[in-house]
Length: 329
Image (cartoon, rainbow, N blue to C red; front, side):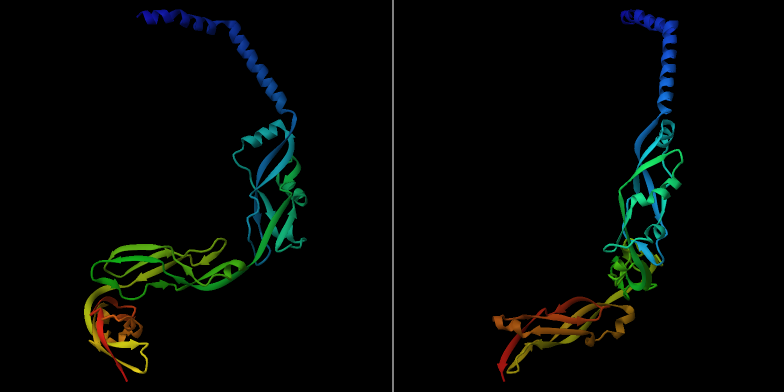
């Protein structure tokens, strides 16, 4: 309670100060004088620099703006304080529009670059900026414009997928892209380096049935494609095991030598789709041993599956290595 009583005199002092008419009059006079000073200051002319957005449009026929010239111009200006305040308080300006066909038509490119002097753009800029503003200078002094010719080609689209299947399921066919090709348009310097495009990565898990998914086609910067999306058809079917006996082939054997293998054939166990089960034969495989592996006095040489059809998934080879006997002819 004592603490609150001690604060009462201070409170009454503040209350008394607020109720003092002389203080109120002083504050009003201060506000008026400040306002008059501010208005007087704004009525004068000032020089300053403002950043003004610019937009580049209408390149010459069948040409393309291939670089990124400045997105803003630094304008050194003279204007009344009121005008400057209004511009400073504006959140955004309507951009200055520069017609590429007009500003480059009387210029010759140097190493493919049009160098446009900013002084030559003064008339165009003044026509698009408020008449209350006097433009003294434009920076940068030179705009560099690179124009490239447009080209259009048709290229294949490669699917980019990561697929995981449920047990005993796999791809029946390679992933199909619909349409298989797209048209791409852009600067010749870019288009000439493109032989194919890829889709955005598509990840699918636990697949056990055929699916179709849309995918965006990835494109280089400054190009357009048609269509922008393709359909990926992923044919899935159930796989089952099949066993086949494959005769062994000896590679790099000198004609002066005869080599016997024990055994002379191997058993291949593979996974194959039900739709292809009857069609898979020993002819779909090539099992080989290399004579070079016999020169190291090894007792066994490894068996390699050198060829198999793409739709067959190899599980194991039995045996993985065989014995051999070398005889002179």
